Length: 121
Image (cartoon, rainbow, N blue to C red):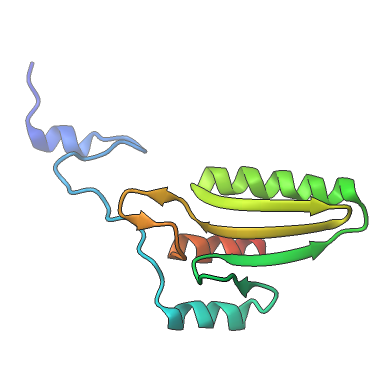
């Protein structure tokens, strides 16, 4: 029994890809105006030297609390495909965030990075 293309496409399940459609273009870098809007909305974050990463520092009551939050952020960033640099000293945790180096993306500030910053607050 053969299936025609319409039946095949309609039967795609969650997470399956319709190969007839072009892939979604990579997340492109944000314009400087959009980055400035983000920084106004989230003043705890700062633009890092070079302009392709965002950074923030948290103060926790103890080192093990900072380390636990660092582990959460690392796992979350990995799941989202982002590059995060973490520095944990005592109860102080510093985070530097940018998108990953993927084909078509230069590792700058993208909508995906913006969403991650918004999720972390």
